Image (tube, rainbow, N blue to C red):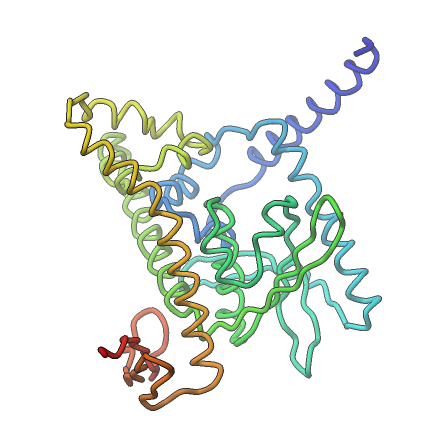
Length: 329
């Protein structure tokens, strides 16, 4: 690389770092970001509220990707408009005071007489090819992909919309894939997110009521045991997950047969994921075809069990739980 080439590239990188640092220092966090509520670590969500200023800046590769967000939104908006759809950019942010959840909807689109929230994501070719429907997000091996539906579900829930739209842009080919979200199928996801928000809010309240550093540390939720997530966390220098778990762990000798079991367990992870995907597809079919009575399909009996969900963080509702049993021959 020529000196002038290196100089220009380094100048760009430094500008991105300065911009990220300025954003972190300028912004104060007073709420739970909807985009973060699907994060698997409650401790992370608490740090995000109380230790935002201490969060490490992402690596330069991530910073380069973050800068593509707005341009990608504009590309998707233009193509949807070219296809004849009315697209709106809502300048107002979501502010759900009850749960202290905030966010910004990328766009809204008029479809079949409704104004629906649209969440736009730019994905790598590999991730883009993996996503066929909303369930595909939850089956991804990337934790941040699993977070995306929660964000849109919360937007829909707050806006009292029963549907939402994902517009997914392949960052290599430029293709757009549409995934439709039906909120009714994911009420459990909404409830989990609202429970998280409630716990974080309680932590923040207790955190602000004491200046005792030791007490503040004790208030934090337990660490998760997932180093793949921890190694990418901007708060790992505060949490120190590896150091914490290493203190408790010790090397032990076990029979080779037990090691084989651990290896087999790892292999079966994919089977479990496939089972969950197929199970969701089957039950989605039942709901869409309004199966409300017991039926026999092939060698299987499907029981439609009527259930009532009591009001918790989401309104009470009646629903049907499907139980699938193979008929003994």
